[in-house]
Amino acid sequence: MNAMEQTRSGRFTVTPRRDGEILVLHARGDLDVLTAPTLSTYLDIGLASAPSVVIVDITDVTFLSSAGIGLLVETHRLTERGGISLRVVADGPATSRPLRMMRIDEVIDLYPSLAEATGDC
Image (cartoon, rainbow, N blue to C red; front, top):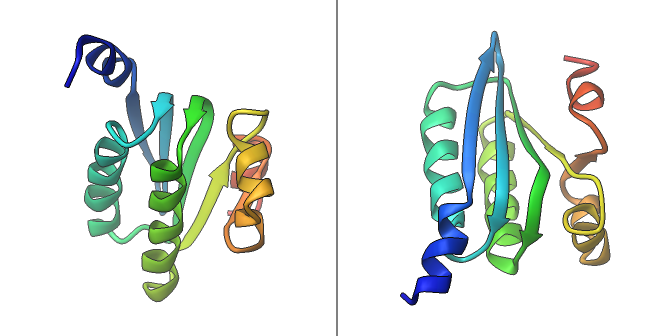
């Protein structure tokens, strides 16, 4: 790993928050092949507590790679099997645009804001 990769991965953070049956994971920074495992770990830990709704808020993600998109799709498969509602908050050219271009929004519920994602919970 070179110095630039270390800097990029160092800017990625995930902040978990639990509100009753709702788990919210707020990601910030570049979601790529280096940082997707970090989000995956938070998802694994969060799913073990069996929430009814998991919200992945990527509105503060500045770069979304295919690794990040793949992780969201795999998480959808896992949550769907477990009867858990997965909601992704994505707004803007770095997040919602690639998800819509790849038609991921036809598989995963996308919301423009956290308020809308939690609105009917």
